[in-house]
Image (tube, rainbow, N blue to C red; front, side):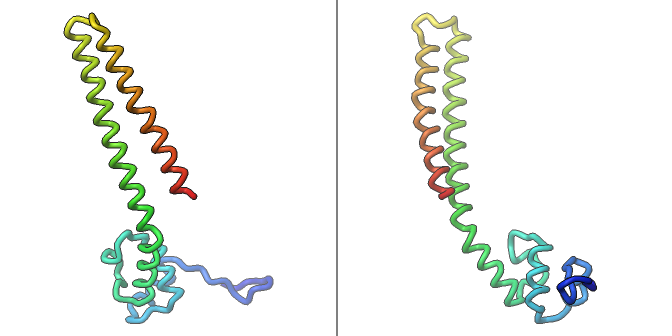
Length: 135
């Protein structure tokens, strides 16, 4: 595109504008960068130009940058799944206790207090991990 001000021209990258160049064996680095961002594929195996050195470099940089973040997210997911399982178990105990004739021995209150005692430290631990991962 022509530009009327300080720049001589303005180059806009779109899927259509780079389509012809994608047939080349060796992509221009700017075209490779545009292709990488336009495709938005998680895996290099899913992109058409997976053998291009610039594309490979971009995926390596992405992997290096986001690998630790993915691990942290997976770790959080495991903790959340465990918390959900334990919460479900506590609620099942409370429901069974109430279905079997009420709360004659204060079991419902004890189960609820046990849940609170378990979940409060877990909540604090998750908040601390979230703060340390964002720093």
